Length: 589
Image (cartoon, rainbow, N blue to C red; front, side, top):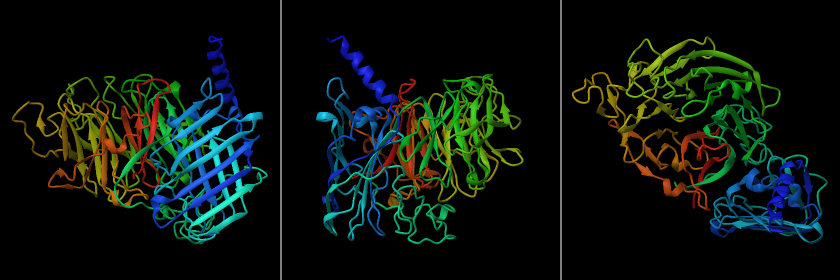
């Protein structure tokens, strides 16, 4: 009998993996939403029990595919949660073997406002779905009598369990109580936001409280330009932060980014040669781009970044940086297709190929600057100590920051003296440039150039490593060099990972804070501002961003930034085929 258990478990997992996405309208037994003056005492309770539509066996396994919750009032000015991601790592399987009886999700800290979700089977195949939580992080506000309220629980990319409450036993601020809702006809459309109510919800990209176009947010609550990117996004005071895992099962993630007018998706680069889409906090199964056959991987080689130009919505172009099968760096342009979640893999246009003499120090970051040009970080060509003096050689593209005109494809050496710039970024608020440059044997550094950026800066390698002479080891000529604003020695780490200045919508008090990490020692540190050539207001946020619940951020390969300026952390994992993770930095308590 004991030998049969693994087979049964495999069968259950296979059945879940092979289940077809579907709508599952359910009857809502009870819904309670409270919004008292003391935000810490907010409450949410939803329950649907003994319902034949609730059968976890026919859905995906939320431990691997993830799940989300969304509660939305459909009347003007009603409350809404937006899409709340349920970290896959917090799900446990119920029954024997685990998952046979369903699943339970727990977060005692209720960092997103959700404390517990129960999704389980029941007698005679009549299952139960429960959502419970509350506290200051719970986003649904009850400031007026509510119209009909939709509850949606989504497993993976498309198994949707939905309830629709229309009759209330109590419906006045600050409390709503409803019960005995009949199953809706279907769940075919994601719950629409009520455009014009001032709350960005559902598929809305913005909501500025009106239905007029021409002010940055269109009459249908779609972004017209970046001026309205925060319209309808609720804010949280203070600088307390936490991290929530929004995707798992990735293979060697190396970058996270998004087009400037696309707040509902982020794109994750997988080093072997794929780009994946996380849509409303759900990792999509089909890759956006898959070019493994062109890419040599791994070590410091592979598909290393993707950049979307400011006009991506109209041009459909995006630019990748990868190491080809000859070991050389390729900067290439691809086109979007008719499906916004899948690119045209046959549309490659190579802008340039740069020979790499060694396998390491490829740089690999593509970033569009505030001037609309494509900036590319190039390492010094590898080996150790820059034996060819390429970083200081103006005839070489290695060890440089390049600027490429995406139209004419003209390449300009913008800055030099870089060893291996592993992630650089422009501050969305100021245009200032931050470069994290990986050191040799002793020093890691962050370089800084205030806006407006100018060409010709020399960051010192291989004359300097950090603020210290390298070649020669003493008495070096520092004339004309720009030294880093921050450095740390190898007792702290061995390979810096650069990040971003936070300019997000949710946490205004955090704006202006630069985040960075180290691949070898996964701390997450910050500073805020630069004065007199030195980073100011240094901080360590490692403990704040520890995800808890048995999860850990192990090897930070990159930070990411979405269209709203919110930040993400890419955890490479142990380098396996499915242990990479993406965490989102969210308000803490």
